[in-house]
Length: 103
Image (cartoon, rainbow, N blue to C red):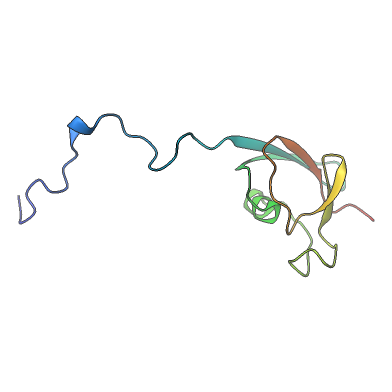
């Protein structure tokens, strides 16, 4: 058995495996991305993630330059209002984002 014996063996008396430190699972939200030509793509994410990171992981080509919201290159329609994708965080609800819109 080696020098550690049963040191790394699972202890069945501990009960069901649960997420460590979380009182409840994070809610998964849906983003519907709508491109400049009307093409659509859906992606899933957790509320609080930066939309820039969500777009990157979904393969959405968001244009941005400054990375801190000053240049407004990444401005998009998030729901019914304009937002800067590089700094805006995912709300705790499903949303539609129209990206690379003309100003």
